[in-house]
Image 1 (cartoon, one colour):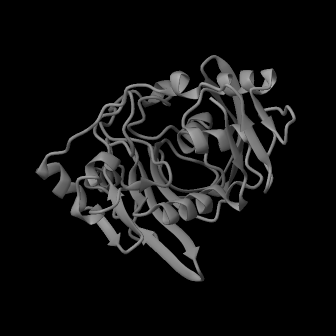
Image 2 (cartoon, rainbow, N blue to C red):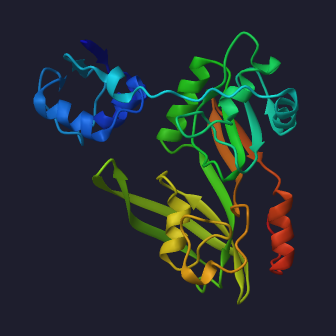
Length: 305
């Protein structure tokens, strides 16, 4: 299959591999790099590396690039019951003409996939709120993380919000309860985080500003404002300093195995952004299990702004 794209301002200065995923879907990194090397993907009729950042008016051409066969996997469609639909509609914080904001529950994925069944996109596709349109997911929030989540009601708003997230113009605040006492009460974490795409090792820069809200010898309540948006960034960074999050089954130290919590104690507490000079600020109430653990660990949240 042959195809071409002209880069517009939405994607200016984006890596070519990310650009292609935005346009075509979840293409494996190995396939992108192989196609770039072989000339099946060219920018302005020239070969480039996967680290190349596209510019406005760049012409991206694909030659005999059979991406559908490579990336298409059978997705599991979720058909929500009326009870599940109403339960999630009751979590809505704001519902306007362009998007909804809700307090996402822990244990539910944002989008469906080959591994995920129950997900917000499929649930709200059945809602009268999206009558005549469909829900657009505009950012990530891990399945086990609760808190503020946004879904657009139309393609234009989806593109706008996605662009704001990509350009780091959306300011997010997370709260977490982690094991042990964090000595330094505030600062910045700057790490090289490792992930794997198939068997390829990828190192990504990750930066987070943090502040300890309350602490004792047993646990700490911490506020985190990620500057970058890497996968599992906050969970990895807390694990790296020896203070894994309560309930984290993936990133945990040996001393955190006792009294393992069912829920991940990581909550997307606040989101701030601006559209056409109008400021938007949304906060999501803490889940009951989160406030319960705060009491058990004798951590004070009342004085938090």
